[in-house]
Length: 470
Image 1 (cartoon, rainbow, N blue to C red):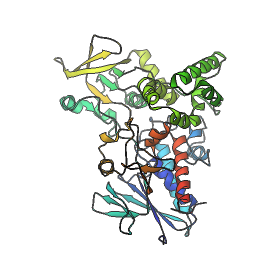
Image 2 (cartoon, one colour; image 1 turned 120 degrees about the horizontal axis):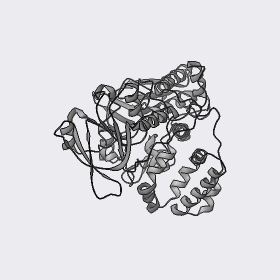
Image 3 (tube, rainbow, N blue to C red; image 1 turned 45 degrees about the vertical axis):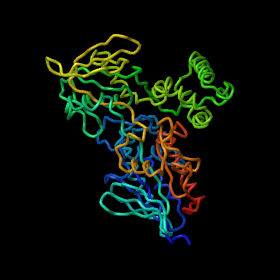
Image 4 (tube, helix red, strand yellow; image 1 turned 90 degrees about the vertical axis):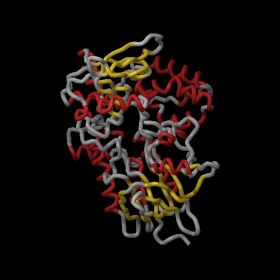
């Protein structure tokens, strides 16, 4: 007989964990305990929205950032309550979004009826998950010795931390002149105002760090170095929702191979731009079709995409706020910012101070050199679980409860969000929701997709009998 109050334990209180908890609290129609476990006391924040800086803004307009799939204007109403000047096309500070998630969670908790769900917030570091055994439900073991039991566990952790672009010996040599995780400490506190700064990577994190330096009045030059040297692309300033052209027929008529599909898309988008249309609308229109397209690709085409096309996809698909892009263009026009493509070969102390950076430009044989004073790791988050510093992730892999996908994008998860184990089996008590769904769907890192996944997971839990929801 099932317990009178079954428990669903969610590990991780960033966006995905919070959105899942909110959906459970809002929809439960019978007694249910929802336990939200987070390492820090800042529930509903996560790394993305934990910043206190006003200059770090969302990379998606407010009109498309609702956490609720069934209420697309939910966040926009919150924004207008905070500041009536904000509109659907506004790029608001990330800390506002963190506050929004906190308020959404609190409202769902308050509105949950006595016969519905109740929320328990737990602060602690999970070390291991123990499967159900001997008639007892699954357990999560915490670093402080506590043990939490639940009939269903939802893993909601995010990306693995970015890999270091420098080896351990070089990092040790740089010492405080190297920032491996720029989100852990404000960059202005680490970097002297006249320092010559190297940002390794040229994506959204690098742009955020440039904006931080700009707001702090940084005077020294900044050098962006990435393997492709692709400049960030901005969203257009807008007050209206973008158009959504039809791309399904383009993909369907192109054939099954990646090469044919890419050729068809280039020709179609090129013709649309020649007619005066915005290429951003076409890239955005791919979103609902991306999971099906990715699943249909063969293994060779997936590897080909990751090797040759992913940097271009990331640049065109994951765009920045116009305000942030304006900082990038102003610094480059002033000659204080350089962006180049290449790979680091060596970093060594320079005789006159600082460090001599030797790097090989993309496609070149010879090396170039410049002097830098501080190096910041701005490379993208990783999906390679083998590189995770999390003891929980390490234990899940070692115990065979989860399996990384072959391409290092995330976890093997089935259509019902059940996690596959080392034998390829899925357990009805263990689920995953979050950006590591990228292995299954490719498009699984932005709010418009993650909110859909949270809602779909709750629906699957209801079907599986974990809870009774509306």
